[in-house]
Image 1: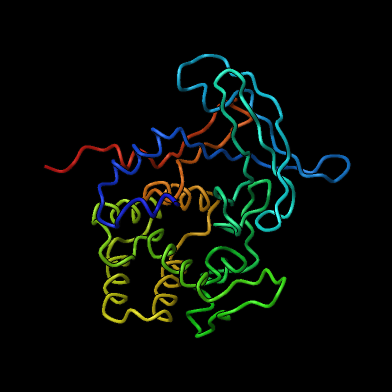
Image 2 (image 1 turned 90 degrees about the vertical axis):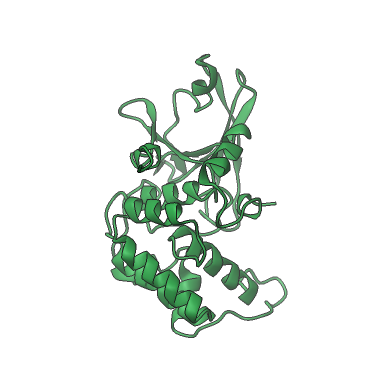
Length: 266
């Protein structure tokens, strides 16, 4: 069962986050660079995020490199901490746990790829489902034998998750929609209006258009991936992002978490 299957759109966001914390789920990202042989390898952290659980020093070792048929088309590293008996994958920037496509158009070293603009900037990412639906292109209902091409049921699932991720799913908890607008640095009214349009005309092409409308409004900055990853953590699609900062020798948490810890309005 995936994280989002545990919860409804209106469930309390704090209870969702507590659920992941209790599971000790980790989402660790570090830049990947090519070595002298051209193999992509990550910046190795000095300790694991599990260090924060009890302040005991981590003892990290390479467990294995995990081959991927989809997602980043190169093996990604799995580390294990013998102190805390915990293993975790080092994801390259742009990818989320178990994700087959990038969440944002960034290179393995974290640089934003800006060959296109607006919603088209997200061509080749998880938002392909919305880009296609917006122009009335729907994926085939059945795939051919041995094909890895996505099907219509996958496109519908990606649309549904993109609506939640961008804060425009009808019936979404209002607090989550406000948080999403703050984190993505866009007017909350834009998200509200997009959700209202989908609720009135809930066909898949309109869902795709609404998603593209939000993508068009996103600022193509170096923080784009972190913003989207943090929004996804806020609605419990994956654990909170922990990004290894090799210069400061720390796991850098999202700078947008303060939005969620502010006092409630009285």
